[in-house]
Image (cartoon, rainbow, N blue to C red; front, side):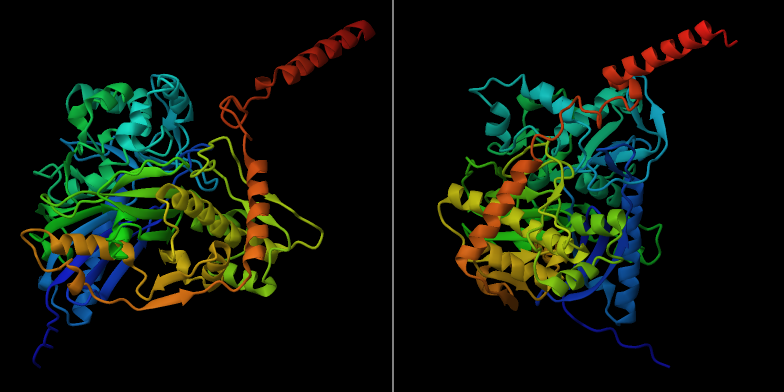
Length: 587
Protein backbone atom coordinates (compact mmCIF):
# COMPACT_ATOMS: atom_id res chain seq x y z
CA UNK A 1 0.00 0.00 0.00
CA UNK A 2 1.40 3.40 -0.97
CA UNK A 3 2.28 5.79 1.84
CA UNK A 4 -0.17 8.65 2.34
CA UNK A 5 0.91 11.76 0.55
CA UNK A 6 2.12 14.56 2.84
CA UNK A 7 0.04 17.76 2.77
CA UNK A 8 1.84 20.71 1.21
CA UNK A 9 1.06 23.88 3.17
CA UNK A 10 3.99 26.12 2.41
CA UNK A 11 6.46 27.29 5.05
CA UNK A 12 5.55 26.54 8.66
CA UNK A 13 6.85 28.22 11.83
CA UNK A 14 6.92 26.76 15.34
CA UNK A 15 6.66 28.63 18.63
CA UNK A 16 7.60 27.61 22.16
CA UNK A 17 5.24 29.36 24.58
CA UNK A 18 6.64 28.87 28.09
CA UNK A 19 4.34 30.26 30.80
CA UNK A 20 3.96 30.19 34.57
CA UNK A 21 1.67 27.17 34.67
CA UNK A 22 2.33 25.36 31.39
CA UNK A 23 4.54 24.95 28.34
CA UNK A 24 3.27 24.65 24.78
CA UNK A 25 4.66 24.14 21.31
CA UNK A 26 2.50 25.41 18.44
CA UNK A 27 2.96 25.30 14.67
CA UNK A 28 1.51 27.95 12.33
CA UNK A 29 1.13 28.32 8.57
CA UNK A 30 3.21 31.43 7.82
CA UNK A 31 1.02 32.47 4.89
CA UNK A 32 -2.35 32.34 6.65
CA UNK A 33 -1.39 32.50 10.39
CA UNK A 34 -3.55 29.36 10.82
CA UNK A 35 -2.73 27.22 13.87
CA UNK A 36 -2.12 23.68 12.59
CA UNK A 37 -1.29 21.74 15.74
CA UNK A 38 -0.01 22.11 19.28
CA UNK A 39 0.70 20.27 22.51
CA UNK A 40 0.61 21.50 26.11
CA UNK A 41 2.24 20.21 29.31
CA UNK A 42 1.41 21.51 32.79
CA UNK A 43 4.36 22.44 35.01
CA UNK A 44 4.53 22.55 38.79
CA UNK A 45 5.07 25.53 41.04
CA UNK A 46 6.76 24.99 44.39
CA UNK A 47 5.96 27.05 47.50
CA UNK A 48 8.81 26.34 49.93
CA UNK A 49 7.83 29.17 52.29
CA UNK A 50 5.13 31.82 52.60
CA UNK A 51 5.79 34.41 49.90
CA UNK A 52 8.15 32.17 47.89
CA UNK A 53 7.40 30.66 44.47
CA UNK A 54 9.82 28.51 42.54
CA UNK A 55 9.99 26.22 39.52
CA UNK A 56 12.47 23.56 38.43
CA UNK A 57 14.34 24.76 35.30
CA UNK A 58 14.98 21.15 34.21
CA UNK A 59 11.27 20.35 34.40
CA UNK A 60 10.62 23.43 32.24
CA UNK A 61 13.22 22.31 29.68
CA UNK A 62 11.90 18.73 29.57
CA UNK A 63 8.37 20.07 29.11
CA UNK A 64 9.62 21.88 25.98
CA UNK A 65 11.15 18.65 24.63
CA UNK A 66 7.91 16.79 25.28
CA UNK A 67 5.75 19.46 23.64
CA UNK A 68 7.95 19.56 20.53
CA UNK A 69 7.92 15.76 20.24
CA UNK A 70 4.15 15.40 20.72
CA UNK A 71 3.36 18.23 18.30
CA UNK A 72 5.57 16.62 15.66
CA UNK A 73 3.67 13.35 16.22
CA UNK A 74 0.33 15.12 15.75
CA UNK A 75 1.52 16.82 12.56
CA UNK A 76 2.56 13.41 11.24
CA UNK A 77 -0.92 12.05 11.95
CA UNK A 78 -2.32 14.98 9.94
CA UNK A 79 0.06 14.09 7.07
CA UNK A 80 1.81 17.44 7.46
CA UNK A 81 5.50 17.30 6.62
CA UNK A 82 7.47 18.66 9.58
CA UNK A 83 10.43 19.36 7.32
CA UNK A 84 8.41 22.43 6.28
CA UNK A 85 9.04 23.98 9.72
CA UNK A 86 11.54 26.69 8.74
CA UNK A 87 11.99 28.56 12.04
CA UNK A 88 11.14 28.48 15.73
CA UNK A 89 10.31 31.38 18.05
CA UNK A 90 10.39 31.50 21.85
CA UNK A 91 7.96 33.35 24.08
CA UNK A 92 8.42 33.13 27.83
CA UNK A 93 7.32 34.20 31.30
CA UNK A 94 9.46 37.24 32.05
CA UNK A 95 11.52 38.19 35.13
CA UNK A 96 11.80 34.57 36.27
CA UNK A 97 15.46 34.09 37.14
CA UNK A 98 17.71 31.09 36.45
CA UNK A 99 21.39 30.55 37.26
CA UNK A 100 23.13 27.47 35.86
CA UNK A 101 26.58 25.88 35.45
CA UNK A 102 27.93 26.31 31.92
CA UNK A 103 30.24 23.28 32.30
CA UNK A 104 27.65 20.76 33.48
CA UNK A 105 24.44 22.35 32.16
CA UNK A 106 22.85 21.89 35.58
CA UNK A 107 20.77 24.65 37.24
CA UNK A 108 22.44 25.88 40.42
CA UNK A 109 19.19 26.97 42.01
CA UNK A 110 15.47 26.92 41.17
CA UNK A 111 13.73 29.60 39.07
CA UNK A 112 12.33 32.34 41.49
CA UNK A 113 8.82 34.06 41.48
CA UNK A 114 6.08 34.73 44.14
CA UNK A 115 3.14 32.65 45.29
CA UNK A 116 -0.32 33.36 44.01
CA UNK A 117 -1.66 30.88 46.53
CA UNK A 118 -0.17 28.87 49.39
CA UNK A 119 1.26 25.59 48.25
CA UNK A 120 2.95 22.48 49.56
CA UNK A 121 6.35 22.82 51.14
CA UNK A 122 9.56 21.28 49.83
CA UNK A 123 12.68 20.21 51.72
CA UNK A 124 14.61 23.15 53.13
CA UNK A 125 18.39 23.36 53.41
CA UNK A 126 20.34 25.87 55.49
CA UNK A 127 23.08 27.59 53.50
CA UNK A 128 26.23 29.03 55.09
CA UNK A 129 24.87 32.56 55.16
CA UNK A 130 22.19 31.40 57.60
CA UNK A 131 19.26 31.83 55.23
CA UNK A 132 17.02 28.86 54.49
CA UNK A 133 16.61 27.88 50.86
CA UNK A 134 14.97 24.88 49.17
CA UNK A 135 17.25 21.89 48.82
CA UNK A 136 16.22 21.27 45.20
CA UNK A 137 17.61 23.28 42.27
CA UNK A 138 15.33 26.15 41.33
CA UNK A 139 14.59 29.26 39.26
CA UNK A 140 13.01 32.42 40.72
CA UNK A 141 9.51 32.94 39.41
CA UNK A 142 8.22 36.42 38.61
CA UNK A 143 5.77 36.53 41.57
CA UNK A 144 8.26 35.82 44.39
CA UNK A 145 8.29 38.19 47.40
CA UNK A 146 11.33 36.96 49.32
CA UNK A 147 13.38 39.97 48.20
CA UNK A 148 11.19 42.61 49.87
CA UNK A 149 13.82 43.49 52.49
CA UNK A 150 16.46 43.71 49.72
CA UNK A 151 14.21 46.12 47.83
CA UNK A 152 13.72 48.29 50.92
CA UNK A 153 17.45 48.55 51.65
CA UNK A 154 18.29 49.31 47.99
CA UNK A 155 15.56 51.96 47.79
CA UNK A 156 17.19 53.84 50.67
CA UNK A 157 20.40 54.18 48.63
CA UNK A 158 18.70 56.16 45.84
CA UNK A 159 18.67 59.96 46.22
CA UNK A 160 15.12 61.31 46.22
CA UNK A 161 15.86 63.73 43.38
CA UNK A 162 17.83 61.27 41.20
CA UNK A 163 16.14 57.92 40.65
CA UNK A 164 18.73 56.75 38.12
CA UNK A 165 17.32 53.20 38.21
CA UNK A 166 13.90 54.28 36.93
CA UNK A 167 15.31 56.81 34.44
CA UNK A 168 17.56 54.13 32.87
CA UNK A 169 15.25 51.12 33.07
CA UNK A 170 11.70 52.53 33.16
CA UNK A 171 11.08 50.35 36.21
CA UNK A 172 10.63 50.96 39.94
CA UNK A 173 12.77 48.94 42.34
CA UNK A 174 10.47 46.01 43.06
CA UNK A 175 10.48 42.33 44.03
CA UNK A 176 8.92 41.78 40.59
CA UNK A 177 12.10 42.18 38.51
CA UNK A 178 15.11 39.91 38.03
CA UNK A 179 17.96 41.99 39.49
CA UNK A 180 16.83 41.69 43.11
CA UNK A 181 16.03 37.97 42.72
CA UNK A 182 19.55 37.45 41.35
CA UNK A 183 21.01 39.55 44.16
CA UNK A 184 19.18 37.32 46.70
CA UNK A 185 20.51 34.15 45.05
CA UNK A 186 24.07 35.52 45.04
CA UNK A 187 23.75 36.40 48.73
CA UNK A 188 22.16 33.14 49.89
CA UNK A 189 23.18 30.20 47.71
CA UNK A 190 26.76 29.01 48.23
CA UNK A 191 26.74 26.84 45.07
CA UNK A 192 26.06 29.96 43.01
CA UNK A 193 28.68 32.04 44.84
CA UNK A 194 31.29 29.33 44.16
CA UNK A 195 30.30 29.01 40.48
CA UNK A 196 30.61 32.80 40.03
CA UNK A 197 34.07 32.76 41.67
CA UNK A 198 35.15 29.94 39.33
CA UNK A 199 33.64 31.61 36.23
CA UNK A 200 31.17 28.73 35.71
CA UNK A 201 27.88 30.59 36.33
CA UNK A 202 25.47 31.85 33.68
CA UNK A 203 22.38 33.94 34.43
CA UNK A 204 19.30 34.33 32.32
CA UNK A 205 15.56 34.63 32.23
CA UNK A 206 13.67 31.55 30.96
CA UNK A 207 14.28 32.44 27.30
CA UNK A 208 18.06 32.43 27.84
CA UNK A 209 17.95 29.07 29.63
CA UNK A 210 15.85 27.52 26.84
CA UNK A 211 17.81 28.96 23.90
CA UNK A 212 21.15 27.95 25.50
CA UNK A 213 19.86 24.42 26.10
CA UNK A 214 18.10 24.00 22.72
CA UNK A 215 21.15 25.19 20.76
CA UNK A 216 23.52 22.69 22.33
CA UNK A 217 23.91 23.56 26.02
CA UNK A 218 27.38 22.57 27.17
CA UNK A 219 28.21 21.76 23.54
CA UNK A 220 28.22 25.29 22.17
CA UNK A 221 24.85 26.55 23.40
CA UNK A 222 24.15 30.23 22.63
CA UNK A 223 23.87 32.41 25.77
CA UNK A 224 21.61 35.28 24.71
CA UNK A 225 18.40 37.12 25.41
CA UNK A 226 16.37 39.70 23.50
CA UNK A 227 15.74 43.36 24.28
CA UNK A 228 12.23 42.75 25.66
CA UNK A 229 13.38 40.24 28.27
CA UNK A 230 16.53 42.22 29.08
CA UNK A 231 14.38 45.30 29.73
CA UNK A 232 12.68 43.47 32.62
CA UNK A 233 15.83 42.75 34.63
CA UNK A 234 16.52 46.29 36.02
CA UNK A 235 20.09 45.90 34.70
CA UNK A 236 19.40 47.02 31.10
CA UNK A 237 19.52 50.59 29.83
CA UNK A 238 16.44 50.94 27.59
CA UNK A 239 17.93 54.00 25.85
CA UNK A 240 21.36 52.61 24.88
CA UNK A 241 19.98 49.04 24.63
CA UNK A 242 22.94 47.66 26.61
CA UNK A 243 23.65 46.21 30.04
CA UNK A 244 24.40 49.19 32.23
CA UNK A 245 27.62 49.19 34.27
CA UNK A 246 26.27 51.60 36.90
CA UNK A 247 23.13 49.48 37.42
CA UNK A 248 25.14 46.26 37.69
CA UNK A 249 27.40 47.87 40.29
CA UNK A 250 24.39 49.20 42.21
CA UNK A 251 22.82 45.74 42.42
CA UNK A 252 26.19 44.02 42.82
CA UNK A 253 25.77 41.81 39.74
CA UNK A 254 28.90 40.57 37.90
CA UNK A 255 28.46 41.49 34.22
CA UNK A 256 30.28 38.40 32.96
CA UNK A 257 27.33 36.14 33.89
CA UNK A 258 24.84 38.15 31.78
CA UNK A 259 23.64 36.93 28.35
CA UNK A 260 24.33 38.76 25.09
CA UNK A 261 21.42 41.03 24.16
CA UNK A 262 19.99 40.58 20.65
CA UNK A 263 16.99 41.88 18.73
CA UNK A 264 13.65 40.06 18.94
CA UNK A 265 13.93 38.75 15.38
CA UNK A 266 17.21 37.26 14.16
CA UNK A 267 18.85 33.85 13.97
CA UNK A 268 20.36 33.09 17.40
CA UNK A 269 21.39 29.49 16.71
CA UNK A 270 20.19 26.14 15.36
CA UNK A 271 18.12 23.47 17.15
CA UNK A 272 20.12 20.54 18.58
CA UNK A 273 17.79 17.99 20.21
CA UNK A 274 18.87 14.76 18.51
CA UNK A 275 18.34 12.68 21.70
CA UNK A 276 14.60 12.71 20.91
CA UNK A 277 13.92 10.78 17.65
CA UNK A 278 10.71 12.61 16.74
CA UNK A 279 11.67 16.09 17.95
CA UNK A 280 15.12 15.45 16.49
CA UNK A 281 13.54 15.96 13.07
CA UNK A 282 13.80 19.69 13.87
CA UNK A 283 17.59 19.42 14.22
CA UNK A 284 19.18 22.36 12.40
CA UNK A 285 16.01 24.51 12.31
CA UNK A 286 16.95 28.09 13.29
CA UNK A 287 15.68 29.62 16.53
CA UNK A 288 15.09 33.11 15.22
CA UNK A 289 12.44 34.83 17.34
CA UNK A 290 12.45 35.73 21.02
CA UNK A 291 9.98 37.91 22.91
CA UNK A 292 8.83 38.16 26.51
CA UNK A 293 5.28 36.86 26.61
CA UNK A 294 3.56 40.25 26.82
CA UNK A 295 5.57 41.72 23.96
CA UNK A 296 4.82 38.58 21.95
CA UNK A 297 1.09 39.10 22.54
CA UNK A 298 1.41 42.75 21.43
CA UNK A 299 3.01 41.57 18.16
CA UNK A 300 0.50 38.72 17.80
CA UNK A 301 -2.36 41.22 18.20
CA UNK A 302 -0.62 43.28 15.49
CA UNK A 303 -0.49 46.37 17.68
CA UNK A 304 2.19 48.01 15.53
CA UNK A 305 0.73 51.53 15.65
CA UNK A 306 1.20 54.17 18.36
CA UNK A 307 -1.69 54.06 20.83
CA UNK A 308 -2.77 50.48 20.12
CA UNK A 309 -3.14 48.40 23.29
CA UNK A 310 -3.83 44.82 24.31
CA UNK A 311 -4.63 43.09 27.59
CA UNK A 312 -3.59 39.48 28.20
CA UNK A 313 -5.59 37.53 30.79
CA UNK A 314 -3.42 34.74 32.17
CA UNK A 315 -2.12 33.98 35.67
CA UNK A 316 -1.82 37.76 35.91
CA UNK A 317 -3.15 40.51 33.65
CA UNK A 318 -0.83 42.55 31.47
CA UNK A 319 -1.95 45.64 29.59
CA UNK A 320 0.54 47.06 27.07
CA UNK A 321 0.15 50.19 24.98
CA UNK A 322 2.51 50.79 22.04
CA UNK A 323 4.08 54.27 22.42
CA UNK A 324 6.14 54.05 19.23
CA UNK A 325 9.82 54.97 19.12
CA UNK A 326 9.68 57.24 22.16
CA UNK A 327 9.90 56.31 25.83
CA UNK A 328 6.88 57.63 27.71
CA UNK A 329 7.55 57.78 31.46
CA UNK A 330 4.44 57.30 33.54
CA UNK A 331 3.25 59.70 36.20
CA UNK A 332 0.66 57.17 37.37
CA UNK A 333 2.51 54.03 38.43
CA UNK A 334 2.95 52.33 35.05
CA UNK A 335 6.16 50.83 33.68
CA UNK A 336 8.08 51.96 30.62
CA UNK A 337 9.39 48.94 28.75
CA UNK A 338 10.70 47.75 25.40
CA UNK A 339 7.84 46.53 23.21
CA UNK A 340 9.94 44.87 20.47
CA UNK A 341 12.84 45.29 18.04
CA UNK A 342 12.04 43.18 15.00
CA UNK A 343 15.50 42.88 13.46
CA UNK A 344 19.12 43.80 14.13
CA UNK A 345 18.87 46.94 12.00
CA UNK A 346 15.24 47.74 12.82
CA UNK A 347 14.20 50.48 15.27
CA UNK A 348 13.20 49.71 18.83
CA UNK A 349 9.59 50.34 19.86
CA UNK A 350 8.52 51.08 23.43
CA UNK A 351 5.38 50.48 25.47
CA UNK A 352 3.68 51.53 28.67
CA UNK A 353 2.70 48.54 30.78
CA UNK A 354 0.45 47.95 33.74
CA UNK A 355 0.28 44.59 35.44
CA UNK A 356 -2.31 42.88 37.62
CA UNK A 357 -0.61 40.15 39.68
CA UNK A 358 -3.73 38.05 40.24
CA UNK A 359 -6.12 37.35 37.36
CA UNK A 360 -6.51 33.68 36.37
CA UNK A 361 -4.74 32.89 39.63
CA UNK A 362 -7.85 33.98 41.55
CA UNK A 363 -9.80 31.18 39.85
CA UNK A 364 -7.11 28.71 40.84
CA UNK A 365 -7.31 30.01 44.43
CA UNK A 366 -11.08 29.51 44.54
CA UNK A 367 -10.55 25.96 43.25
CA UNK A 368 -7.48 24.84 45.22
CA UNK A 369 -7.82 26.80 48.47
CA UNK A 370 -11.55 27.33 49.02
CA UNK A 371 -12.80 24.36 47.02
CA UNK A 372 -15.92 26.19 45.78
CA UNK A 373 -15.25 25.07 42.19
CA UNK A 374 -13.80 21.81 40.86
CA UNK A 375 -12.57 23.16 37.50
CA UNK A 376 -11.60 26.63 36.32
CA UNK A 377 -14.51 26.63 33.86
CA UNK A 378 -17.07 26.36 36.69
CA UNK A 379 -16.51 29.96 37.78
CA UNK A 380 -18.44 31.20 34.73
CA UNK A 381 -21.36 28.90 35.54
CA UNK A 382 -21.52 30.09 39.18
CA UNK A 383 -21.28 33.77 38.20
CA UNK A 384 -24.01 33.31 35.59
CA UNK A 385 -26.41 31.85 38.19
CA UNK A 386 -26.59 35.15 40.11
CA UNK A 387 -25.49 37.78 37.56
CA UNK A 388 -24.29 40.07 40.37
CA UNK A 389 -21.89 40.13 43.31
CA UNK A 390 -24.70 41.49 45.52
CA UNK A 391 -22.41 44.18 46.92
CA UNK A 392 -19.52 41.77 47.58
CA UNK A 393 -16.06 43.01 46.53
CA UNK A 394 -12.95 40.84 46.29
CA UNK A 395 -9.46 42.44 46.22
CA UNK A 396 -7.07 39.52 45.48
CA UNK A 397 -3.87 41.23 46.65
CA UNK A 398 -2.33 37.91 47.72
CA UNK A 399 1.21 39.17 47.09
CA UNK A 400 0.60 42.93 47.28
CA UNK A 401 -0.82 45.37 44.76
CA UNK A 402 0.98 46.01 41.48
CA UNK A 403 0.24 48.86 39.03
CA UNK A 404 -0.78 51.57 39.64
CA UNK A 405 -0.25 51.27 43.43
CA UNK A 406 2.96 49.20 43.83
CA UNK A 407 2.12 48.44 47.46
CA UNK A 408 3.76 45.17 48.61
CA UNK A 409 2.16 45.57 52.06
CA UNK A 410 -1.38 45.07 50.71
CA UNK A 411 -3.14 41.74 51.21
CA UNK A 412 -6.31 40.20 49.83
CA UNK A 413 -9.74 40.97 51.28
CA UNK A 414 -13.36 40.03 50.58
CA UNK A 415 -15.74 42.70 51.90
CA UNK A 416 -19.38 43.71 51.69
CA UNK A 417 -20.49 40.26 52.89
CA UNK A 418 -24.03 39.68 54.20
CA UNK A 419 -25.92 36.57 55.34
CA UNK A 420 -27.28 36.38 51.80
CA UNK A 421 -23.80 36.14 50.19
CA UNK A 422 -22.98 32.71 48.76
CA UNK A 423 -20.27 31.12 46.63
CA UNK A 424 -21.90 32.36 43.41
CA UNK A 425 -21.57 35.99 44.54
CA UNK A 426 -17.94 35.43 45.51
CA UNK A 427 -17.27 33.87 42.08
CA UNK A 428 -18.87 36.89 40.39
CA UNK A 429 -16.85 39.27 42.60
CA UNK A 430 -13.65 37.42 41.65
CA UNK A 431 -14.33 38.00 37.93
CA UNK A 432 -15.23 41.64 38.61
CA UNK A 433 -11.91 42.05 40.45
CA UNK A 434 -10.00 41.18 37.28
CA UNK A 435 -12.02 43.78 35.36
CA UNK A 436 -11.71 46.52 37.99
CA UNK A 437 -7.92 46.07 38.15
CA UNK A 438 -7.75 46.35 34.36
CA UNK A 439 -9.83 49.55 34.54
CA UNK A 440 -7.35 51.08 37.01
CA UNK A 441 -4.46 50.42 34.65
CA UNK A 442 -6.35 51.67 31.61
CA UNK A 443 -7.25 54.92 33.39
CA UNK A 444 -3.58 55.48 34.27
CA UNK A 445 -2.55 54.71 30.69
CA UNK A 446 -5.08 57.15 29.28
CA UNK A 447 -3.73 59.91 31.56
CA UNK A 448 -0.11 59.20 30.60
CA UNK A 449 -0.70 58.94 26.85
CA UNK A 450 -3.38 61.64 26.66
CA UNK A 451 -5.33 59.65 24.08
CA UNK A 452 -8.22 57.57 25.52
CA UNK A 453 -8.52 54.10 24.01
CA UNK A 454 -11.53 53.58 21.77
CA UNK A 455 -11.50 49.79 22.33
CA UNK A 456 -9.40 47.14 24.07
CA UNK A 457 -7.91 44.13 22.28
CA UNK A 458 -7.78 41.07 24.52
CA UNK A 459 -6.23 37.61 24.57
CA UNK A 460 -5.24 34.85 26.98
CA UNK A 461 -6.93 31.83 28.50
CA UNK A 462 -9.52 33.74 30.53
CA UNK A 463 -11.02 35.39 27.43
CA UNK A 464 -12.98 32.16 26.83
CA UNK A 465 -15.14 33.28 29.75
CA UNK A 466 -17.94 35.30 28.15
CA UNK A 467 -19.21 36.63 31.50
CA UNK A 468 -15.73 38.06 32.16
CA UNK A 469 -15.51 39.68 28.72
CA UNK A 470 -18.95 41.29 29.07
CA UNK A 471 -18.10 42.52 32.58
CA UNK A 472 -14.89 44.01 31.20
CA UNK A 473 -16.78 45.94 28.52
CA UNK A 474 -19.28 47.17 31.14
CA UNK A 475 -16.63 48.29 33.63
CA UNK A 476 -14.38 49.96 31.02
CA UNK A 477 -17.39 51.34 29.18
CA UNK A 478 -15.68 50.72 25.82
CA UNK A 479 -15.92 47.73 23.45
CA UNK A 480 -13.72 44.69 24.15
CA UNK A 481 -12.42 42.95 21.02
CA UNK A 482 -11.26 39.32 21.07
CA UNK A 483 -9.59 37.53 18.12
CA UNK A 484 -11.16 34.22 17.13
CA UNK A 485 -7.69 32.64 17.24
CA UNK A 486 -6.72 33.12 20.90
CA UNK A 487 -3.06 32.03 20.70
CA UNK A 488 -1.70 35.52 20.10
CA UNK A 489 1.37 35.13 22.35
CA UNK A 490 2.64 32.10 20.43
CA UNK A 491 1.62 33.76 17.17
CA UNK A 492 3.76 36.81 17.99
CA UNK A 493 6.82 34.63 18.65
CA UNK A 494 6.20 32.75 15.39
CA UNK A 495 5.83 36.00 13.43
CA UNK A 496 9.15 37.31 14.81
CA UNK A 497 10.89 34.01 13.97
CA UNK A 498 9.45 33.75 10.47
CA UNK A 499 10.27 37.38 9.64
CA UNK A 500 13.94 37.13 10.70
CA UNK A 501 16.68 37.92 8.21
CA UNK A 502 17.89 34.64 6.73
CA UNK A 503 14.46 33.02 7.24
CA UNK A 504 12.06 35.43 5.51
CA UNK A 505 8.93 33.26 5.37
CA UNK A 506 6.61 35.68 7.24
CA UNK A 507 6.01 39.22 6.02
CA UNK A 508 5.18 41.87 8.63
CA UNK A 509 4.23 44.48 6.04
CA UNK A 510 0.72 45.84 6.82
CA UNK A 511 -0.68 44.80 3.44
CA UNK A 512 0.56 41.20 3.95
CA UNK A 513 -0.75 40.64 7.48
CA UNK A 514 -3.68 38.21 7.53
CA UNK A 515 -7.04 39.65 8.51
CA UNK A 516 -8.23 38.20 11.82
CA UNK A 517 -11.90 37.65 12.65
CA UNK A 518 -12.94 39.22 15.95
CA UNK A 519 -15.64 38.78 18.58
CA UNK A 520 -16.87 42.10 19.98
CA UNK A 521 -18.40 42.81 23.41
CA UNK A 522 -20.25 46.13 23.78
CA UNK A 523 -21.08 47.79 27.15
CA UNK A 524 -24.58 46.79 28.30
CA UNK A 525 -25.01 48.97 31.41
CA UNK A 526 -25.25 52.74 31.72
CA UNK A 527 -22.19 54.84 32.49
CA UNK A 528 -23.51 55.91 35.91
CA UNK A 529 -23.85 52.33 37.17
CA UNK A 530 -20.37 51.53 35.84
CA UNK A 531 -18.87 54.45 37.79
CA UNK A 532 -20.70 53.57 41.04
CA UNK A 533 -19.37 50.00 40.96
CA UNK A 534 -15.87 51.24 40.18
CA UNK A 535 -15.81 53.80 43.01
CA UNK A 536 -16.95 51.12 45.50
CA UNK A 537 -14.15 48.87 44.28
CA UNK A 538 -11.60 51.63 44.93
CA UNK A 539 -12.93 51.92 48.48
CA UNK A 540 -12.28 48.19 48.95
CA UNK A 541 -8.73 48.57 47.57
CA UNK A 542 -7.96 51.23 50.20
CA UNK A 543 -9.00 48.74 52.91
CA UNK A 544 -6.47 46.18 51.64
CA UNK A 545 -3.45 48.50 51.76
CA UNK A 546 -0.82 48.79 54.50
CA UNK A 547 -1.73 45.37 55.86
CA UNK A 548 1.74 43.98 56.61
CA UNK A 549 5.25 45.24 57.21
CA UNK A 550 8.63 43.56 56.79
CA UNK A 551 8.64 42.82 60.52
CA UNK A 552 5.19 41.25 60.57
CA UNK A 553 4.75 37.69 61.87
CA UNK A 554 4.17 36.40 58.32
CA UNK A 555 7.80 37.11 57.44
CA UNK A 556 9.38 36.73 60.86
CA UNK A 557 10.18 33.97 63.33
CA UNK A 558 7.13 31.74 63.57
CA UNK A 559 7.86 30.79 67.18
CA UNK A 560 5.54 32.00 69.94
CA UNK A 561 8.37 33.98 71.52
CA UNK A 562 8.47 36.36 68.54
CA UNK A 563 5.70 38.09 70.53
CA UNK A 564 7.39 39.63 73.57
CA UNK A 565 4.20 40.09 75.67
CA UNK A 566 3.22 36.48 74.99
CA UNK A 567 6.72 35.36 75.97
CA UNK A 568 6.55 37.24 79.27
CA UNK A 569 3.11 35.78 79.94
CA UNK A 570 4.28 32.18 79.42
CA UNK A 571 7.49 32.62 81.44
CA UNK A 572 5.69 34.35 84.35
CA UNK A 573 2.99 31.64 84.35
CA UNK A 574 5.65 28.96 84.60
CA UNK A 575 7.34 30.81 87.52
CA UNK A 576 3.99 31.17 89.33
CA UNK A 577 3.20 27.47 88.82
CA UNK A 578 6.61 26.38 90.17
CA UNK A 579 6.22 28.79 93.14
CA UNK A 580 2.75 27.47 93.94
CA UNK A 581 3.95 23.87 93.88
CA UNK A 582 6.85 24.82 96.20
CA UNK A 583 4.61 26.67 98.69
CA UNK A 584 2.05 23.86 98.80
CA UNK A 585 4.80 21.31 99.34
CA UNK A 586 3.95 19.26 96.24
CA UNK A 587 7.13 17.35 95.25
